[in-house]
Amino acid sequence: MAKSILSDMDGVIYRGKALVDGAKDFILRLVETRTPFLFLTNNSEQTPIDLLRKLEGMGIEGLGEQNFYTSAMATAAFLKSQKPGGSAYIIGGNGLASELYKAGFSLTEHDPDYVVVGKTTSFNYDMMKKALRLIGKGAKFIATNPDVVDPTESGLEPAAGSILASIEVASGKKPYVVGKPNALMMMIARKQLGSHSSETVMIGDRMDTDIVAGLEAGMTTCLVLSGVSTLETLEKFPYRPNHVFNNVGEIDPLAI
Image (cartoon, rainbow, N blue to C red; front, side, top):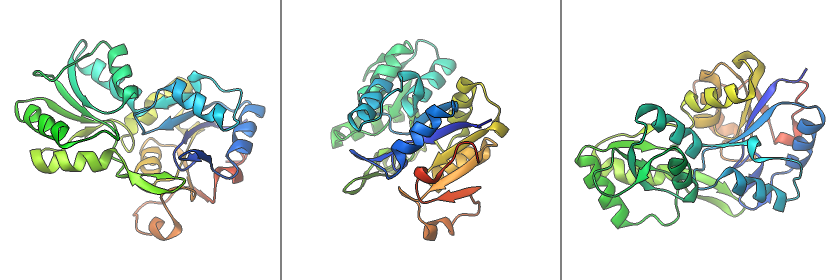
């Protein structure tokens, strides 16, 4: 019986608009072996339907919205559990705004309970200034994820962590990060699959988010070398994944 699979997307399934080698075959194996799986992403810009359509555009069929879980979804669930009906000023994409709306949050620039930051290509100085002033007035500083860069087909590009760094330096305050490497996101996803930690595998391309989150959640971890981490950077960390693969095409869900 295959273990349940949690898999990162950026750098694991695709890089930008291009599928990673072996990704389509890997997904077909998951479906054919009836392996319970969930694709996770720290990218808070996109909704599950966006991710589904993206994979369909790459030739991946047979999936549904229920196969995806984003850091925006985890952030909205966390904030709803902390302050139902609260308010937030967000720096992020439509995916983050959508999930907070669905969680019952109002989005405002006037005395919000939270300043919530995720990845967005529209980040500017005015946004940084607003976040700084609102945090200074008492708004809690929340981050969807700490990834400094994201892999694309043309190379690395700045991600949420790069935006967070500017606000953190200006405000002198560190955010509470909901997504990976916080094991909270792993636990929520695992519960959705109805599996125990010992029966769950986390696949990712980042030692500092995917692998450490899976490790701290008690899961089997698989590092793929198709994204950010390399064999050289792997040696810099005090912990190791259970398995290392060149890409997900090498992973047999029945054998890990």
